[in-house]
Image (cartoon, rainbow, N blue to C red; front, side, top):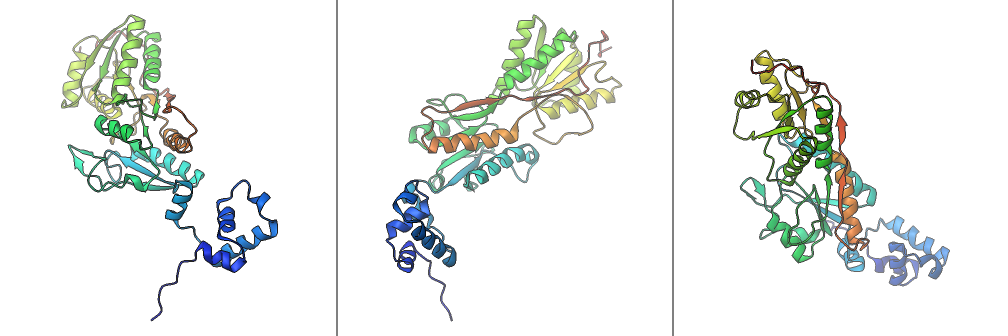
Length: 349
């Protein structure tokens, strides 16, 4: 029976090439002064031995040498695959993966965290955060207490999505929801809408609160009437009754799927969308929704947010930023076909 092949070490490479281990280390690490201190033929001899032996640097030793092992953790506060929200999170993960590949880093998906109240908990008895140089956090809602602990412990991290302060500024790459929502409100007002409804939570996760803030600020600046209708726990029929009870002419749906469900219910009652009621979706679907409706709204720069989150994290690991980086990226407007000038008809009649 043959034993397993012994791992080739830097000492082995040094013996094979007749140089010191320090010289091998300089060549391996690609130090800026290597070409000056090491003769070109010596450097090539070391590289040839590395290629011939298939030498791979010990990640633990490399970490001791440069303090980083080029592994980035990815923590998701809720399951992202396979699940009904998988399509929503896939572009974020793609951007994270592509930037990590571009920078020569590996990803460690932190899936062992226990789930409490429907959300994964980052800190637990066997958490493996310190196996990675830093961590990218992804999810609609993150526990403020865990963010506070990350900041207090000095663990490098960045959030995909804007986060409120948690004992200090939280580094993030988010979408500029207030600006995107405000632009849609102004567009509706320019078309003649004067009675607006915000359909959704409007608070809680920062992404919801930011949309509501953008809506409320723009509506107040335009001097138009607006109301808030919570969507949680209410079926489409009930929501449509609430929306059409007044003289609302346009609905801003916080969740894309709620806007679709409202449009479907309206059509079942014989209403014309958008002639009787305009509907605007404030972002991409976070849960399955019909694809045959061309809703007016905006797209979230999900892939770019994932990419830039890795950029922010690796910049922090290099010490390139003195303060926590906080970036808000613009959303892309979707013209769609569900926002038109009001006709003056009351959809309740």
